[in-house]
Length: 443
Image (cartoon, rainbow, N blue to C red; front, side, top):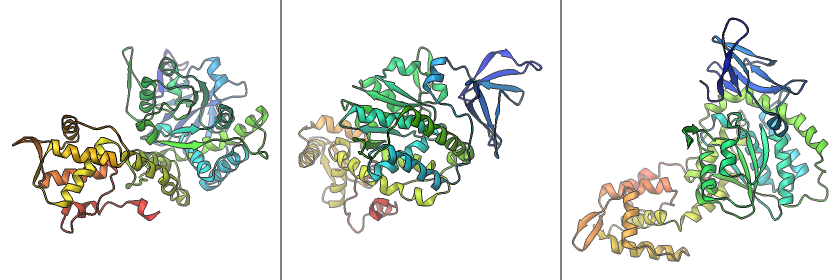
């Protein structure tokens, strides 16, 4: 059973075919089903056959009758469903139109404008992205954010504005719809931070009342009190929303309806025509830190047949990647790897006690502005969790600087995004690391 469907407890009117309530389907041959609204405001289906989309009350396939999934009245009021499709032209043209409407109603830097436009496109293909990007919003005033989120509701797929979302509320949402959540929050509890991370990753489920819930969806989040953790912040897009300029257009309810009427059909057409291409994307930026690399992959996957746009993704994310690298300098694991690399490259020691290694680690942390110190026992446990196991030596547990240790440390350096320090000319592991292209050095 496709993940966005469920069997209804009834039979079709023509011969007993089982009825499947669907919120969207993607079949192997490229056929797609999307929810639509008809002239009466009720849900119908867009059926895409690879060339055009037709609005139908139902869709027959492989002995099953697909019908629009059940949606209550409040959901129909909160979420916009397109009632038609329009040829989007080209990716470059559609992207330019997104930039124009964002620029007309919002005060964002050029870099932030482009990041938001990229994020809007990913909101139309969350079901085929390995990591669904989150848009984190900073602003001096909630009023500025409210206007910004009203605009995003016009542009994103199945967008709904929410306030003060908690775990129970998140569990109760109709997640089969894969809605785009536009959330205004005062604070975030630890459990909510974990759930938000889980809702970005494909194949990660949350256990709830005997069920396994797939919470994956697009999200834009504004939190008054910055309660975000490093893992959530690193793999999200960051934008700053300030007061609209005096010449900005007034975002009235009429303007919102006109924007939605213009863009929803275009963006739905983009989804229908490019769904398979996005799912097969091989776009990558291998030199980025892990969270930023996943983010870049998703942004690049959502750009089809526009190399001039996908080629700008690495420069757009480079400042955030540099910030992530800077923040990692005070993470104990990253410092342990950095210190180990330095000692391997010095090639002066054959072994070192953990208590002495811990002194090097704490000294490096102090140099980077961290005041917390770690005991030899804590450093030993962190070494083990990194796969750098210690050995019993005279005086206590210690590290052996053999070839296996060197290979492991170099591999960890790449995975942690640690800047490789200049190694000795004969270091084979440095030569192997040099084969990995780092696009940051080309920016």
